[in-house]
Amino acid sequence: MRYKLTFAYDGTDYQGFQSQKNGLGIQTVLEETLSKIAKEKIEVVASGRTDKGVHALGQVCHFDTLNKMSCNAWLRALNTYLPNDIAALDVEVVDDAFHARFHVTKKCYVYVIAKDYNLFRRHHEAYIPYPLDFEVMVEATKKLEGTHDFKGFGVYVEHKPTIKTLFQSSLEETDTHYIFTFIADGFLKYMVRSMVGTIVDIGRGKLPLSVIDIILENQDRTKVGKTSAPEGLYLKQVWY
Amino acid sequence: MRYKLTFAYDGTDYQGFQSQKNGLGIQTVLEETLSKIAKEKIEVVASGRTDKGVHALGQVCHFDTLNKMSCNAWLRALNTYLPNDIAALDVEVVDDAFHARFHVTKKCYVYVIAKDYNLFRRHHEAYIPYPLDFEVMVEATKKLEGTHDFKGFGVYVEHKPTIKTLFQSSLEETDTHYIFTFIADGFLKYMVRSMVGTIVDIGRGKLPLSVIDIILENQDRTKVGKTSAPEGLYLKQVWY
Image 1 (tube, each protein chain N blue to C red):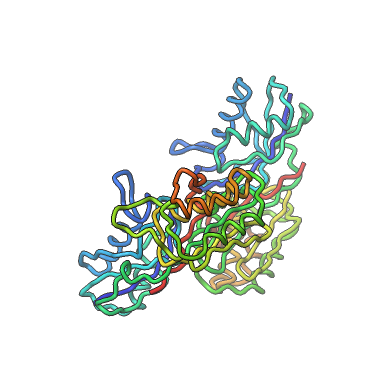
Image 2 (tube, rainbow over the protein chains, first blue to last red):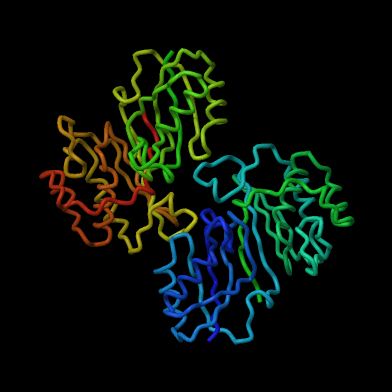
């Protein structure tokens, strides 16, 4: 039986979704917990990886098991045995053909920047210690929307397509935060943090607004701003 | 020259304000940072200790140094060299007779309980997985106000007075949280967490409302509820 699991995690204490030589990944914890509950070895396939320190509000994976527990029983058991920084949100039975990575149609990432440093939120939001021009950042963010070759903003992996469609690229301002929302059919490694870093550098006046067009046209990675910090990034939702 | 320093900290990664055999305290980090800046050994005297995992929004200490830097220079230097989970908020020159512990007139603690578990806030708020009766908790909280012998709610230390005046003991409810505020001329060790634990047990229906009067009248420690978790507790303000 194949199950689809939606889950959230605080990435602070992990080396990323995948385990690394130097530390534990969320995937390992999840697989160990599922295996313990099912009393058989279970492997998961997630919608994609997240980097060290990056969080998820709605990551998705699938797994196969002979253990035909009800979805509610899975949910309760997972939230009993998972550590406090990983939470199962939803479990459903899916067709054996369902694939959590291959069948993704859209993903949503949000990136949160605090206007003031809050030491209690330091692992869960980015802080930029410079004044930022909100209007020009909105313009820069809007320029990214649409279908482009995002190679300049990502890490190139051979044979992987770098043309993506950004359905939504928006920025809102609250009294305390700047919040970016990006919805696309796919994201390259470091793409969101690279886009945010570039937009922030534009907002600080360190880069001109036109740099966005140049990077999108020439895929010139040397032009992008500093990759923004992982603690502001959340994988919010995955669509199938 | 004697300085008064007001500072905030996230207690999550410390063994408490004071260093213990098994781990680092905030005091040690603060003294090492001050000593490094002043280029001489500096010791601090704080308004009081906080326990492992307890936070501060406005802890106060004093220290003496021969280094006559301006208050602003101290503030900037401290926030450059302190780790990200400790922040200097204010530095002022005080009379040599000022004492950060002996001269306290009032202290304010707040205790924050979340209505829903939020994995991103798990080190910074308490979560009670039971329905709570707000009205009866308000009544219980109000009963604590005034001058009482709080021995039943604290850990008794020989020769230390256990009669305290609680000027404010209140509870408010928001959409997402219950927030307690306690202002007193002094607090016994574990007193706030012991009061909150008892009030929560009353709110759950595990203890009757009358238990507050019994503990205050008979100082009966066996009657108090479970000491509430440290992560919900903040030392908010100290008055002199």
